[in-house]
Each structure stands twice: as C-alpha cells, then as structure tokens.
Length: 151
Image (spheres, rainbow, N blue to C red):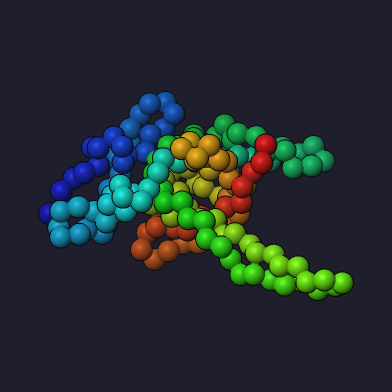
C-alpha cells in the first residue's frame, strides 16, 4: 500500500478560495513515495493555471473565464533551444527557436479543463505564458506547450 503524501500542502494544488484538493498518483516508487510527488518536489515550481476565454470584439481579447477557477499547483518548467534555421538573401541569418513546455500532473489539467489560449503564470519567474497545445502523455504527465506573453 502506498503512503499517502497528499496532505503536504506544498504539493497539493489549491483553488483560490483557499480549499485544498486531495491529489493522488497512480505510479509509486518503492511502494512508498509517488513518482509525481518526487518529480514535482525536486524539479517543480509553483504555477498558477489561469482559465481564459475570448471576447468577441473584432480582435482577440482574452479575459478570465468566470466559469472555471484558477488553480495553484506545481509543475516542471522546461525551456530548450530548438532547431537553428538559416535564411538566405543578401546575407545569411541564423534564427533559433525556443521550445517552452510545462510538465504537469494530469489531475490539475483535467480539474480546470486546461486548453489552448489559457494562461500559465510562474510566480517565482514572474512570467506569464499562453497554452498553445497539450500533448497527452501515457504516463499521466501531459506536456503543456507554451509561448511567452509580453505585457
């Protein structure tokens, strides 16, 4: 039987109303500590999942979605350099892309129905990102692909 570590407040997601939500993991290491808890404890940082919706007005104007609550949880931020592309013309220019992802437990993603256009705030970095798409992973930790929002 796996040890219940979901009572540790630093690993459990919180809805902005102050209520704690019980989270459990299906995958266990040495029958003691869930893998997701260890991944989040060692590599994770706090993230705020902010549901958004688009208001019609001739252009995209996202506002908070009142039908879905913001959620504070933990996830693993990854920003890796992508492929370098060379473009021609009169001279050669090099351009590289940056792939930004958030590895997060499946439960918070399902809890607020995270989707394209929603925002993810990293309080320790003071950075705001927008969800571009979500890759479902068979291990229960979806990869949320992000682009940085400059305000």
